[in-house]
Length: 502
Image (tube, rainbow, N blue to C red; front, side, top):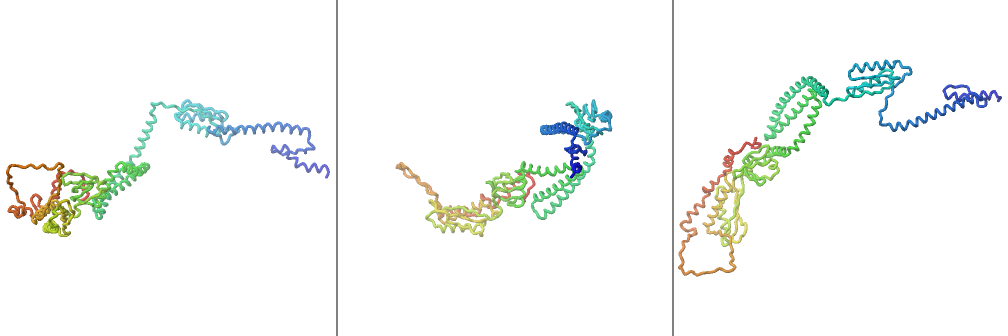
């Protein structure tokens, strides 16, 4: 290979010299053919390029920490494109913006000037929103590079009522527009009220066929009416353009109900108890019941409580929640009731004969029922007597239990006395620690008049015949007088409300 061929083969590689770095490929001789001028040009380029590259790198490194430190500052908006030769002159931009701001009458002493596409704004705005509006208008103006907004917001006086007046005007105009809608909503509510009454009547008629409790019928009818009214109010508010208020009403209904439930818990409990009492019917009006230590006749059961008339003629008001949870003794639910009394006879008398005498008295009395059969049993052996317990059944609807017991005890005592069966008193032992002094009397003994207790004496049969009568005037004829007692007390009762049971 000769010298010329070697030079030509290296030319393509030599073209990637300094000129290629600047995007302009130039033919540069290979290193063996570099001239002194080329060396000087390379040295000059290196001396200028290296400091520029180093300064550019240092500027980037120095800018990074400052960007990290200034994270709280608002970033400055930059234009998408900056024209090298702007079409609009700075003076034209200032005049155009000045005229726009003055036309709005939102600014006082506004001043606008432009320098190299940068717009400077000064003056006073009536509020902050108009200040921001002025900045946005300047940014959207043609050939504006940046905006320096130095407009201040005017401070309102504490006596300035302009915002309140503006709000009142706005409310007035809104109300005028809302009047037709409110009229339509009122008409919807009135129509809903009529529909609710119709539905309540239908519900009462339907429930009356299956439910006997008037209170439960009223509760069901009221529930149906309330549901219809809630739907009507919601529709009326929607028609009136008050959708948010409609949602609030429906959402607040549950909250209000919950709050009222906690506030009036006792009242609600009494009300629910009255419903359950009217459904279960543990007693009726006129029944003689006993609960919580109170015994009396049921007069009324209202939504608040139960009124009792005691056998003494007093009125007792008991809350329904107490009545529903208490143990109730109903003396009138079954007219057949059992009574008993105890008779003591002497140890020397025949127990069997005494039982037969008392049993004959029970069997012959009209108030004592044959089924269940009466019984005379030995109850206990006392200190001086053999105690016999007498048990019998009677119809409390016809006879008074206390009067019948009195008559039977009177007849039993008479029968035992006629049969010469003694009824001694309990033995008593008297102790004298120092003995009993005995003194002799010189006067002759006086005769004493003793009344014979012998049933064979002339006066005894008349007394025994009177005691054998089935009833006496003092025993009231043995008839049940509960109804007369309740009628006598009814005139003195106060109105307590609608009676829920009959």
